[in-house]
Length: 115
Ligand code: DGP
Image 1 (tube, protein in one colour):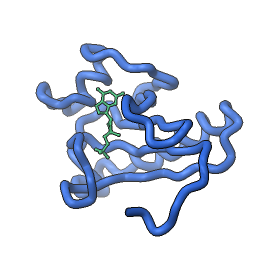
Image 2 (cartoon, rainbow, N blue to C red):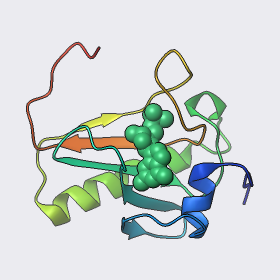
Image 3 (cartoon, protein in one colour):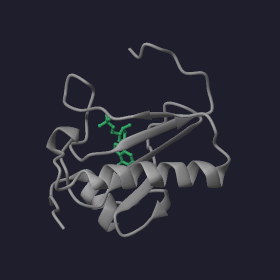
Image 4 (cartoon, rainbow, N blue to C red):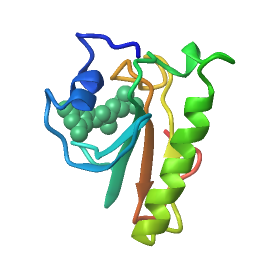
């Protein structure tokens, strides 16, 4: 599995950097965001290092489907029915960590369009 030794989320996946994990399987890890933007804010990340959504191809895109299944599983288990899934891709879109991740935000009214 591809890893990047300088990547923050690869270090969280490996446990080198601690996080408040709420789910883990062979393919993904979910952990609470250190800077929550809503009462509930966690991230689902693939264990494999994929720098952004822009790096997805037919060869690795099944990981995205798995991430969404994990999101639904966690939300069902936690009784979360209304939520927003966000992926920031690239600097201008606000991606600060260059390892594919999906934000799950819940527990407050969400605005649209996003800023
Ligand atoms: P983005 O800006 O879309 O790349 O989201 C990155 C998120 O990662 C941001 O909401 C803050 C979160 N984050 C950054 N560093 C850490 C960390 O060390 N631990 C945790 N749990 N979250 C982090």
